Amino acid sequence: MNIFTTLVLLPLLQVVTAQSVTCNLEPKYAAPVMADGWESRLVVNGLKRPRSILFDTEGALLVVEQRTGIRHLKLADGNGTCLSMQEETTLVQDSELNHGLTLSNDGRTLYASTADVVYAWDYDPASPSLGGKRRIVVNGMDSGGHTSRTLMMSQRQPGILVVSRGSDGNVDIETADVTSGRSQLKAFDLNTRTAESGPLDYASQGILLGWGLRNSVGVAEEPTEGGIYSVENSVDEIERAGVDIHQDNPGEEMNYHGFLNGSKENQGGNHGYPYCFALWDTAVPNNDSLSVGSQFSMDQTTTSNDTFCRDDRIAPRLTFQAHMAPLDMKFLPNGTQAFISFHGSWDRSAPVGYKVSSIDFASGSPVAAADSRTAATDIMSNPDLSACPENCFRPVGLAMDGQGRMFMSSDATNEIWVLAKGSSGSSTGGGGSPAGTGTGTSPSPTASKSTAMRWDSRAGPLYALFWAIWTLF
Image (cartoon, rainbow, N blue to C red):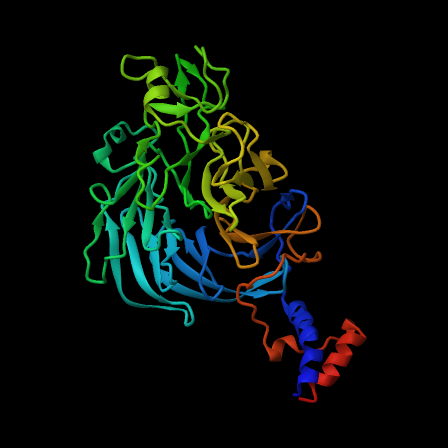
């Protein structure tokens, strides 16, 4: 094939490859509502409670399936939101794996968590396969209550693994003692660890980034400045002065935990739990000066009261509607926006959450003031919350690919969705025109000559010309 023919065929090849991808999955519930300028599409279904997701160095999507294991998904890419699963591989079968997932900075070590331990495997993304003996990196986290152990590998400080551990119940009084090791966010330096190193103990080792965190499942590193943020699931069934205020209080939280570069500024503080909480609805008993985001106490005693909560505990950087259940947080590479998956409520008469929202950032911090009630902008949401949770998607994990497309797992519906900037706000399960999403490396474009080069007579004269030229070679 000479260079002239190559130049002629290349753009046609790209068009035909895109046309060969099947993207016609339809959800079994009402199509999501998208913000203006965004589109979404159902990419994968039939999974088993997918939780954390991430892309490996080869562009494949790795998925933790709760109580099942880890799956490797190779996606066929038709550009825009038109993708489909081409090939799947089970990397790990383990009924104890439940949420956490991350990769080493070189992409050659895979980490995943149970309620008690963080495991590591040698990982070959090209095969794809795991090699060597499974190793325990962190242990000592076994407890009841909140068992998700979120994992995040720092990109600014390579080799630093951040691990979140929640409380043992709704109001876990023992977490008021920092030595409990619960309701905490910690960082572990793995740079000096080897395959023969023993496990690190969560309660007694590591760098304490924050405590008094009931269940901070979503953890993220802001990419421009390197600050660590988490999103908190606050308590249920709360009262104040004997009055039930749980419908709209306390708010869910976004907390800030400083940096991983050795600086101690804004690091290691107590964020309130189990005695202090963030206010969302200010119409509560005995509110003298509390505003949105203020730390408050359920009771006014000599040891726990609003003054103590204000002066001795760290208020959140942002507060959200109670019970929305934030489970993941991811930043744009330029740090101008963070995306949060809100899994949705169970402890509220009118459902809330069940959506993906964005938060504007600048210079490493949220743009909105700490007392804002409008910091979050809905990107993808269910159209009728009265149908939730039974007939709604429930966002959990988020992952961004090389083209800037956001992928979202929904554990209740066993699905993966893709969200992308498009020409208008729309959602398509199948059909519809995929929108372009910029340049970059696609996750595993995979159409082969044998499958992508079949000419469909309905495609028109351009394809007929291409097919005629192709068959000469």
